[in-house]
Length: 163
Length: 458
Image 1 (cartoon, rainbow over the protein chains, first blue to last red):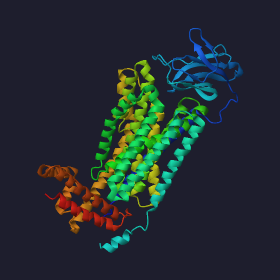
Image 2 (cartoon, each protein chain N blue to C red; image 1 turned 90 degrees about the vertical axis):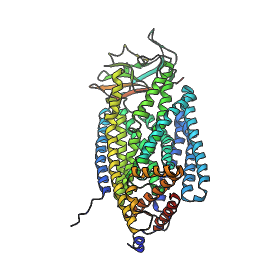
Image 3 (tube, rainbow over the protein chains, first blue to last red; image 1 turned 180 degrees about the vertical axis):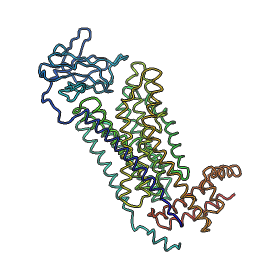
Image 4 (cartoon, each protein chain N blue to C red; image 1 turned 45 degrees about the horizontal axis):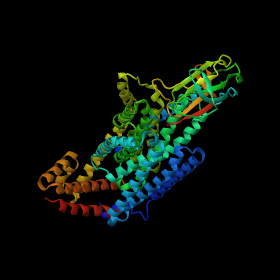
């Protein structure tokens, strides 16, 4: 008796469907990761106040000039935060992220009253480099729960020009 | 089986198949998305991508026109083929040049300089060309025409990258203003890259499947076209990263090292394991759909191919940070291990589909060649079957022709063998009822084989 041969295209199709299941697992894991680090509906109902981003002199630790949103690669700059606007019931931190997503400046985490003496948060040059990286920097005042930032209370986007 | 019975099983379509309409709709949507993104970018962002997008529209229009002229050359006016091909080539050349000029001038040339951009391009051309050569060679039974392989790569390099710049700029602009920086933001960026880049690249394979059905036979062809699109995309992305990092680290005295590392990571280590692998999955899905009987299965296969490509791409972008690279000698080993561990399983998955596809294709062609030889039309002789089913024996026969009569005989025999395999492929598709070409096309092919046989006689 002749046996019917299975169409090899069906085997290919089924193999692809198995890959598709694996792909769904990967994408679901990604979604879970996203929801873990970006929990929806978790809000303290407060906003932080970033006074501005200014040119910064590391030798004196002071800022100068007007509030700016662009800097050259060789300029030093720092953000100034009014911690006193925030209640002490929350834990906060202020973080500079460079254009590669690396942390290049940080204050906290701690209670806002503990951070009052650190109003000026400079963006540091990456280790081993003489200049800032060009591109978009993010300065974020974040509410922290456990060890994890769960909400941005205020943010500023700064452009470091290529030239 | 008599001619009438076969004709009834494979009726001649009355007009253009519906897939052409679908292709036109997809092409129209692509153009509309590009125009919309461009105008919105310029109006609301007014940044470098915004300006690039406006100039990019001209490039896209040139690529579209070149594609139209190129397809027309092969589909409509074979007697004026060379003239149309020259026109298409010139238009494509202008488009590529314009895009390179625009992207370089507006994105990087100000900092890295045009000479650096040219040097980076010169470094990437041989590796990408090698990649395309290998990808085309893997289809050992019936190699895809260079013109389609190159069009695929050009789409990946020019059209897909244009789509991605605009889409990702929007996504990024919204994400950095709304999300907590860190892993969550990284994950959404990875979703953006996976989704938009694979859709942008995969559209090319889908259009080839809809418009150039005669050159799109099965999963193997899908993998070839998909990988070619991926290699084109990888070429432009490498160029972008190299010039960008040169501009960033040049003032620190490490521009060459940074650009060189990018070249190695993307053009050597990741040549086949990055974009080529991802888009090969899209091609595999479409290639499998090509041979499935029901519309529902076709749609599922195409969507699954895209899904696997998006997931593979996502996993690299999202979880790269979990494999940090040390700045010591150990880092050199880690870079290789990271690529193998993170992308290797996906590449192995593509290879598995390729091997299964090649095996199925070889078996089918062998059977069809035997049946054609048995019919006795003279298109395939019984003693030729074993030669035609074996790539090495085909090559040895061509070498014999070269030895006896020179390069002309080699080329003529190669054409004859290709036409005979075309006929077997045609028979295979007709047997599976996967053709919308009339039966007369098969008879024409037999006639052409007879002519080629006379020319190749030695």
